[in-house]
Length: 238
Image (cartoon, rainbow, N blue to C red; front, side, top):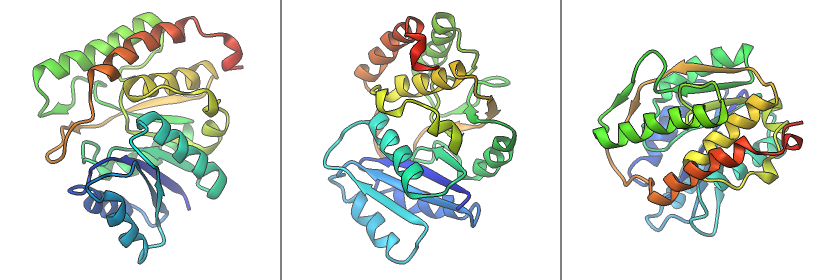
């Protein structure tokens, strides 16, 4: 296995079958891990049925809606313990992230430790977002850079590729944040540990079907997280 794509799901029955097929189509060395939070709409069952006939599909069933951050941490730990994947991706289930970009990530990660798909590198590359959400997102990234010093154009995006050694070098058990703040914290720790980080441009398209998981709680958590990172003890990244 060259790469494992980790995708958290909650009520994604309209998207999950299509996104799995699209991801696996990109490269024979790519496998996929779905982290399903006991979706009431049967998303997990759909994945189970697909996995019966395709060995590159894996799934972790969780007992409830436990959050995006903990889903990714569970996926990362599984990747390190159960596979020999060289690279581990984060990716959304709703086609906001184009599976065709996986190939660009795999090329860029050869010379880097973390590759981030950036919506704001070389301009704004977001499709079908209302102006209010675009302002919120761009403002959050500017705010994060000012407070923490994190030198990224897009520190809150969720389309990423980690080198295996990068994840193994992070204190995964200490990361409890969710949503935007989870993405910021992971990037911040990689930066402070001196890992090579590269942003590549992607086009982000708002979901067509399903319901966004964005909430005020996620926004406020991220707002306070950046101050916690600024005053974090250096022992966490040494």
